Length: 583
Image 1: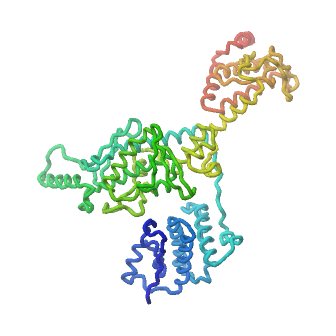
Image 2: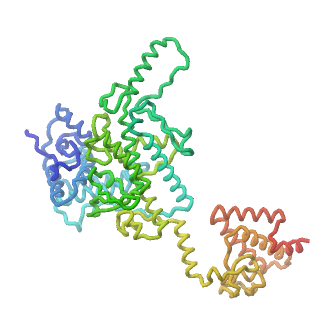
Image 3: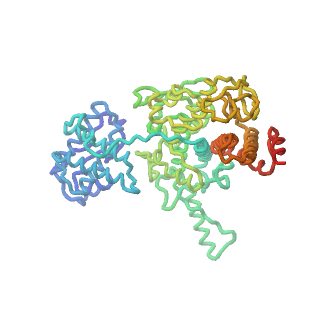
């Protein structure tokens, strides 16, 4: 039987994603073809290891091929096809391993079975498949299969499953967590800059292991060793038995160290210097993301001629086309980054003179440029490097999110932040904005500063070392027995509308001493019923409790004040009265 043509045909064949044999659905005609890597599956098909073609699968595969090509004709991006195929592989593997029917008539039933399988798997304890990923997989297939079966959008296949879209509400982070996140981001940036600076063209061709100096405080020893595939050699300090043989071994190792990137097929165990080139490109890629705020996919797809530079004072304004936005986006490369970018462009021009990509990568053999460039998405080498040196790894997505929220916090302008991040205000709010305790505190303080009837310039010192405007007025819920505010009796200040606490250590010491005074007064009363002094003590305790729980700094003030009280060191406002009562 003649093998049918099931290769996805791209419209723009020159610029189509080089997806290779993975764009060919022919392997799914064979039992077990979905469980193997595409290139390996076709090798086994060539030698007959997967048996004969299963003709009953042909109708389904032809329908899927036609649907994907129709989407391309309708204007869908060629880069969406690999995502469709990666999702379709999982479905085919499910049918293949479960020996389900591949008939087009059974497609709807099989999809619902597969959706239920994803639902159960995503909810198992310890499962690597999250409910969100399960829904995305099923929704993608629902769109493809729904179009093939002419199912209206109102009764989509995904709506007949137990899978639901998962929208995670953004969680607020504390000031401490925000600070740690920023510190980790800054440390990663400094580390990447040092690695990129150390991996120059001369260093790649130089002696191994490569010793890269790292700025103080980042890694132990302030140095990183890169071996490029070679194990570290321990040279003998003094000759040992068989030294002549050892000299030959060391000579061979020295030759390996001098192997250059141009040696596309290094000897077994030799230096693989293309690893260093890949590492430099990945470092520059991450720095580029941090500098420009572009998302990973958009930056990864940049070509050599994709950027349009326009001098703008001491910086460059760069424009490029963004598919999702359907137009040009712009970002600025600042003066301090220009030398880095220029050196990187010279580096890439040397090692990849014919590459169309702005961020190219060598393949796993160092023989040519990688088609998939997975190093720019997984960053396996850098993750290992960060882990080895005790540094926190900040993913590109977290980096972009941190950058956007930092800009939003510093500017306070959602429109400006959205424009700098190359998306709309709605996207900023739904996808990026993260509730911030620090920003909330600033906004609350700004609100009360604007709406507080007492202006800052009108505040005066009260009789308990707090602030007020000198115009006593009682609150509505003042307890019975408590004197009305009168700017003379200290207890009345605590129930005055114009009373304002002071955020200082001296104020904490003052109200702690005042509470001690009222505790003494309450103990001198013979009545078993609650007296006004008890009410004042409770009010002051609430204030001290709030200060203690609000921040570690204020908690230190409260702790210090309590120690002073225990030692008999009272605030000057209350010391004479307390000492008199204690006598």
